[in-house]
Amino acid sequence: MTHRIVVNVQTGEVTQVEYTPEEQAVHDAAVAAQQAEAEAKALADAQALAQAQAAQQTATQSTTP
Amino acid sequence: MSVTIDGSASVTINNGAVLGITSGTAVASTSGTSIDFTGIPSWVKRVTVMLSGVSTSGSSYVLIRIGAGSVDSTSYTGITAVGWSGIANYSDTSGFPLYYNTNTYTLSGAMVLTNISSNIWVISGTVAMTGLNGVIMTGGTKTLSGTLDRVRITTVNGTDTFDAGSINILYEG
Image (cartoon, rainbow over all chains, first blue to last red; front, side):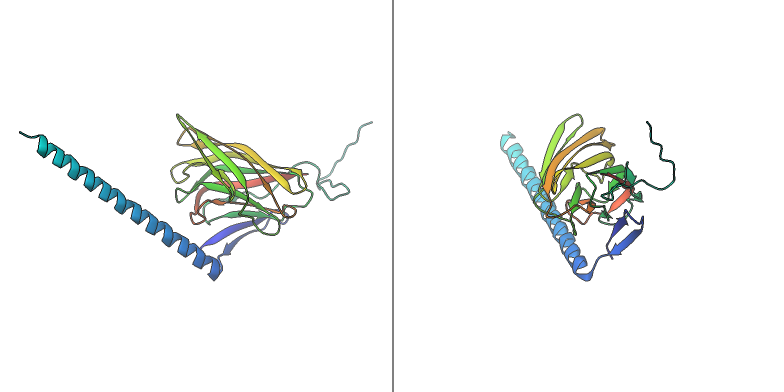
């Protein structure tokens, strides 16, 4: 489970507070969204790279005598 | 005439304020998505957040939030910039940000929250970014709905976890 650290400055007590099921669900959804976003970006970057390489290859072929 | 107070206990005045600076408890910032300092007394007018070698698991920026009864995550004016061989800036309305990637670099320095009047707080401070040889400058303001009683150190995305360093606060009236 995900947790936070809580320090009560008046008592000096330090506790590790586990997320509630609701907080954990929000956390897991956020992590999933971040992963999906990262995968989408990686895919877009790969496609852009492939297109750039294809364009460069075409340009090289057209200028070859 | 001089007055000497000699004792091991703290000295309080009529409104309950403790004279001088009071330290919280330093905690290792080696786990968790946030570190909360709660129970800050109502007479406090200044809170210093101290970071030493703080790092996180991801690339989200470290964020300082404050609250009255609960941590507030809206309506901040928080502006930050990092200077190294270049300079870059960032702003956020969900907290006071310390701009840059703490997955790769670590933070050491202090941020000072000061009460202007009523429940209006301002923040300013400078933090070193080790590894980048950078310096982070942050300023901002936030109006709470009540009396400040807590400070949270977290990240912008709220899911990265702390994995190195230590954090503490000082408070004073």
